[in-house]
Image (cartoon, rainbow, N blue to C red; front, side, top):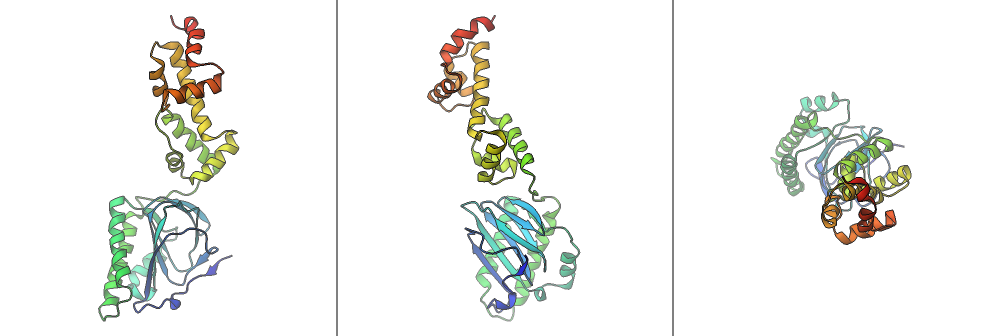
Length: 278
């Protein structure tokens, strides 16, 4: 159910806008819309957002504009998230800008390049510092800054779209592609989740249900498989093979190899190498 949340008339500001910078630590409201224009910039961390029924993954510097009656909800925030939120009365903006917003039917969301994101932050910082000032020139200054924010959005809107959430099957496929290409490197769960466009905890859950093993177990299987081939087709030292296969130490390699194969790497080589290496 959609509800009107935070009507602009409730904001005690003299210049028809309200801005805040907050850490979102839990869903504090249901799907909602506003009677104002809402601009948000994720300045730190990641999260997900549903806009008009479509789900999006939001990396840092994701930039959104909610037109009046657009409805949305944030969820699955990373621990380090920080969001800038700007509410604007339509009366602040020129008619041409309002018409442009109204004429853009698709969800207004994009991911800004880092340097552009920092520029937007500086504009939002200025608005945050000025929102309680009551001077004759302030409405003109605020309107100019808000138009600049909207201009920046539309400039990057088509060239830096934000990814829509894909199905769990596609998430697993993207994760597998990335893992198989990089398993010999140092891999973190967050690296894999970022590539799969998924929250790290959700990726772990999806992966375990689909593959009947953890991501760590899958990576270990790939690394042991590579090590087994190198053990019987090369004369490289076992320590070199362990690092080339992606293990961080020879002790970790020996332990995982023994657990998976019920034999040590040295014994495995001695048993099979004469039959394989010419």
